[in-house]
Image 1 (cartoon, rainbow, N blue to C red):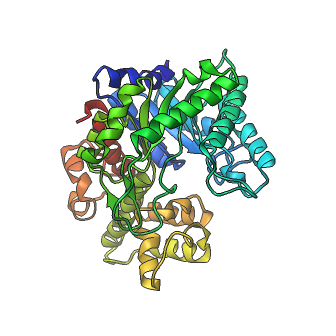
Image 2: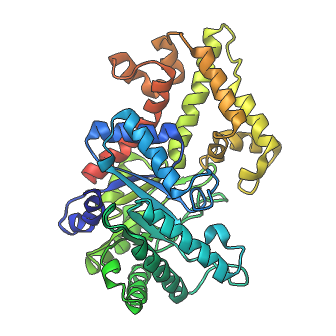
Image 3: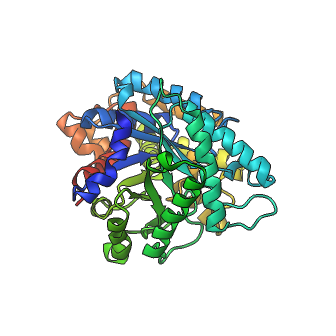
Amino acid sequence: MTTRVLADLPKHHANGERIGITSVCSAHPLVIEAALRQGKSDGSPVLIEATCNQVNQEGGYTGMTPADFRSFVEGIADKVGFARTDLILGGDHLGPNPWKHLAPDEAIGRARAMVAAYVAAGFTKIHLDTSMGCAGESVALPDAVTAERAADLAAIAEGAVDPDAFAPPVYVIGTEVPVPGGALEALDHLQVTSPEAALETVEIHRRAFAARNLEAAFDRAIGLVVQPGVEFGNEDVITYVPEQARALSGVLTDMPSFVFEAHSTDYQPPEALAALVRDGFAILKVGPGLTFALREALYSLDLIAADLEGRPGAVELQPAMERLMVEKPDNWRKYYHGTEGELRLQRHFSYSDRIRYYWPDPAAAAAVGRLEERLAGRTIPETLISQHLAALYPGVASGEIDPRPSALLIAAVQRVLSIYGNACRSGG
């Protein structure tokens, strides 16, 4: 049962076994395909998560309900021959965030409907996030209110479980996370969650669940979201420093039924990811780093196409994406700052990867389609792969990677995922 993979993480850490799991946070079909192919190759389950803004009962920005998203992912799994029984679906930041502009009663009401839809659709990892204030409330809520609202949503989740179809969910609590999608400003340091705050979060949620007779549900709470000191911004990555998180990591001995969930682990080097797992941050969430790798590969294929056509540097995809993002700036305007030249670079090359929101747009899909047509039927020489996709060259040269565009795109994402897989198996 795939839920055991998550439920057993605290036991593994308590026993000194350094085992973790990668949480793939993306709705891009090629990223999901890469994750499932990587899982099939490794013989391991795959955890794919959707956020409250991305997927909800009203469609979210993907236009998908939780049931739609499940069908979408399962369709890709069937295509690549990945067993559905090895697929774990999670709901991230489930709470009132998409409706926080509304009055609390209405926002929480919609959050209840969302959580019920996620659980009914078989999402068996549920992160409850009720930390944000709604209309008329402060931006951040007192811990007691956050925990009470989380317990309220847990009660809804428990009532939505169909035991004949899916296992009861495991829960992740806590909300001490970076800004979704990366920091907005330049970074130089982060405040690691204190051990006292971690213990208090667990205890206050325990009491709130017990007040609603949800002790059995709380027994399935296995993860606590904390800040281990990792983050990325537009141009900066703060790498994990084990010494700075030693006290936080040590507190897991006082709460052996929990591990930590680390958000924004994108762009961490292999040794940092392995150290995170070793120190009990057993759930590693990654999203923008995967679509960043996909964008790199797409832009490299654009350069390869221009070389094959005898028009070096005559790229078409990047200008098309630039036009689209300038025409529709809502997905990046609040996040990028600077001169026009700096904004242009950020639109395409920021670690925050706000360009990921544009790939589903019909104009972007058409531009990618034109790139595929330019490369259709062409053999890409190894020398051009060495020039423009150097990280993939060894795999192509050895015959492990097929030098076709679609295979190269998936391999670019799998290269990142393999680093996470190694970290989750070795823990440093």
